[in-house]
Length: 463
Image (tube, rainbow, N blue to C red):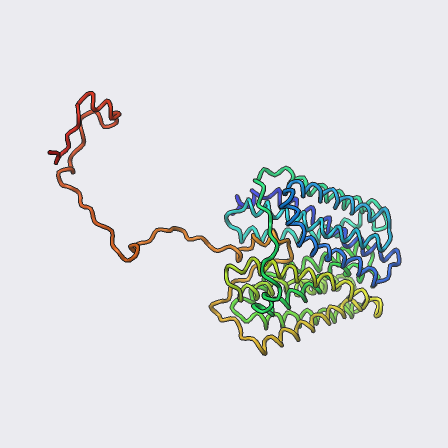
C-alpha cells in the first residue's frame, strides 16, 4: 500500500498546496470584508458565489476537457485562478469580489478535477486506503492554510499574493507528472429526481449538509471576528472546526455501520445542534474552551455528508453508485451556495449569534426531514448495508477513487465446474510413450537438423 501512496505523493502534495491556498483565501476574504465594513448579507453573497461557480464548474469543465484535453484545460485554469486570487486584493469592491469568487469556484473545481483524474489514473490497487489518505490530506491542508493569515494580515495585498503563489506552486507537481493523460470525466447521468426516488434521505442529507458546511466555510471566520477574536485566533478557530471534521468523522461514521443510518443522522444532527447552542453562548467558554468547542462542532457537522453518501449507496445498485454519488455532489454544492447567503442575512439581523443559530435551524430542519422519511420509508435491510467510507465534498473525478464505486474484480476466472454441465473428455497416456525420450543428443536440436541427422523420427505406435 505504501508503494501505491508514494506513486502519487507529488499529486497529493500538489492538491494539499492548492487546498491550503483555497482555505487561506476563504478566511482572508471574510476578514478583509469585515474590516471594509461589508454588511454580513453582502459577505454571505460573496462567499456563496464560490459554490455557484463550483456547481457551474461541475457542469461545464468536463465538456471543456473533452474539447481541448486535460493539459490545456489545466494550464488555462491555473493562470485564471492565480490572477483571480490577486485581483481580490487589488480592487476591494463587493460586486467585483462576487464575480471573482464565482470564477474562482469554476477554476478551482477544474483544477481539483484534473489532479484527481491523474490520481485516479495512477492508483490501480489499494484504492480505498488511498482515497482515505487523500480525504485526510485535503481537510488538514485546508485547515493549515488558515494560519498563513498571520504573516501579513488581511489588510495587506501581500496576503492575496501568497494565495496566488500557493495556487501556482500547487500546480507544479501536476504539470510535471509522467502519468498518462486520463480519460475525460462525464457529467452525471442519473437525474436528481430519480436519485431522490431511490434514496430520499441521502439527497436530503447531502443538501442540508451542504447548507451547513457552506455556512461554516464561508462565515465561520466572520463569526469569530464579530465575537472579538484577533486574526490569529480567527485562523485557529476555523482550523479547529475543520480539523474536528477530520478527526471525528471516522469514528462517527464507523458507528453508523450495521445500523439504520437515518437514526444516526438524527443523533448526529441533534448533537451538532447542541454545540451550535453552545457557540451562541460563546462568552461562557473563554480562551481554549472556545477552540475545543469548535473542534467538536466541526466533527459532528462535517460527518453529515459522508453518512448521507453511505445511506445513499446502501439503496443503490452497484452500477448506480458512481452516478448517484455525482448527483449528491451537485446537491451538496447547491446547498453550499444557499447557506452563506441566508446565514449572512441572519448575522445581519441578530449579530454574530446569527451564525450558530442558523446552523441550529438547518440541523433541526434536517432532523425533521429525516424523521419524515423514517415514517414513510422502509429501512435498508441489514444485508444490503455497505461499509462507511471517510469522505467529503470533492470533484466528480475524485469520486472514482471511492472504493464503493468500483466493483471488486474476481481473483480468477477459472472454475472447477464444467461448462454447460458437460464434463470434458479424459485423455489417458499411452503406456508406450512413458519411457520415450527421443534420439540421443537431439532433444534441443532444430527439426531440420534432426531430419538431416536421423531421418524421419519413428515413434512408438507408428505403422
